[in-house]
Length: 437
Image (cartoon, rainbow, N blue to C red):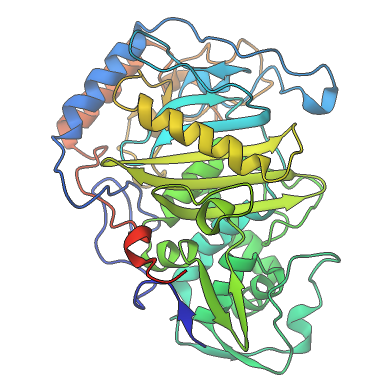
């Protein structure tokens, strides 16, 4: 099967890893090859120290009064106390652009994918249905396990669990597919049929769900509860904008993950399939976003529209996750994502962060803020009231709540360098590869 508009084939796991990530799931980001940037150590320390004295969060308009559209009063504070607060969290200051108008998503987050700094967020830890954005976790968990040229003949039992009304790529029983083709079906067409076949190869849906849950816990994606590997609506299946950004940041360090999620179109059997990520492939009312390089979209009746995207511009790489816009206009999730990308590229380097994307548990230095046990929502006390060092386990604080916690974390960074990103991710150069319409 011939793939179009994609980089050359590569191994599933990239051999080069960033310094602060474990082999389980490395984190960090590269930016454009040209234009070297100075060490992020000083910048990170400066920005986080300034965050201690930053003004209080500027609240967005209050959510609607409907219980289904109101965030919980207490959410996880993992990554920073302010990320557990309802409403919009941002440090506006002279030179920092105001946030875009017309944002209606229940939850969103803008982060610097290289440093992990959260530039702004809105209900970042609200646990919501993820739809097919959960396929990022599926891919980050399963993709390294099978070489892309492995071939597999689909058995009838492999497709029995595909939910009614699922998005499918057209996998047929009795036909043999390469692993590479199945992953193209997952990323481009969000094919639940391809997910179920790959799950069968991995030992079945139940085993795959368990593997995904364990991997989510390793990534510290503690808002995430996996019920189905494909993101199909299921009771109690939830994630958050914060977690989806963590998951995307991990997956993007695998070269095949980057290549698949940035592919615009490909051949699947006799059919050409096109990526349903509209910022990547474009649509009548949404142009291709300059610098976009993935990642994954989703849409179900229960979850609404969800999207996580990564884009590079001017030597900066940003991650944006948007969950369930209240406005139901055509392609609204992409329009709001584009607005947040535009804001982020103007604000990065100027705005003091309101939190951070934490590294996996196995990568966080012992005793650091990011390896501290988080606070559980609903355990009492105001969100972010406890420092990371004293918070109980469940899904909460990383230590941006107090100056002492930040100072201690920075000493760890300065001492061991384990929390720094000083290498660049080779994100796909989509504009260079778009030689065909």
